Length: 81
Image (cartoon, rainbow, N blue to C red):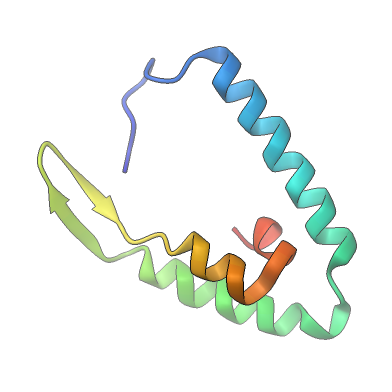
């Protein structure tokens, strides 16, 4: 779902950015080179899945499936997303 400007506070944005950066660092360090094609293919499939839009007044919702991607890829889901 898309959020309008000003909904999230600066503290929430800062903390979530730091957590995401930490997850990307851990994901890249744990990523084995033989799994890079698999991670790329699943990232592309999940990106296409996000194109599905479900109308939910007053906005719309996109399929994210981040949890399923996390189950399939583990820590490699952070840099893939």
